[in-house]
Image 1 (cartoon, one colour):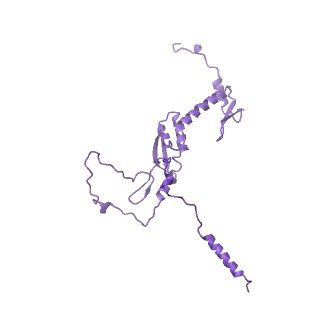
Image 2: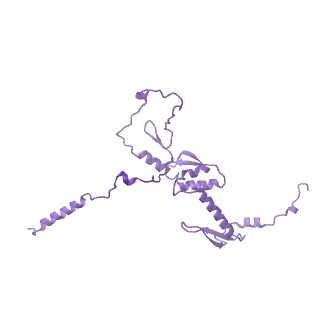
Image 3: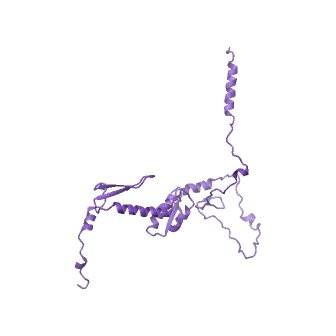
Length: 245
């Protein structure tokens, strides 16, 4: 025989468990238009990073090979005159509505190109190309199997346009001003001409550029044969034989 009050206690426990399972009140967002009147917020216009296309059989292609472009009629010409029903039964291939593609194609393209158009890569390409005067960079885009499936040419002087509106992006003016400041800093720091002396410049994010001085191994990197060749006395111009001699 159960003790008095046991059944009622069990019923209270079950009620408590059921109550915990009920949806609790969550925060809400008010929608009155008057609450949102004010200056237009910052909006970064989207820029095209690439494209993919689907052919008539709905097969995915990570490029524009299956795209069809709209060519508008001349502005001052006659209006369009074509029959939308012409060829419809023969050419139109209805989509299988039972197949839910969702974002599969878009996500596949993102996976294939996730490491190709990041801002830091453009910065690296720009820095390597701008200083030596390389006008263009040809980038190859690979698929997950490692095969290059498309190419894109980036004019060096226009690379910054891809990240101009990115608040966390890079700026070529900042890069070149820092480069000039660093070269001036290095020129004023390295004042001793000694092939055995090495000045090591270091930088950690959030801190300044620092320099330490070292001698010989393991920091020295110029081979002895090069140093000896460069330090040999060169013949003076007065002793250089003339082509007439």
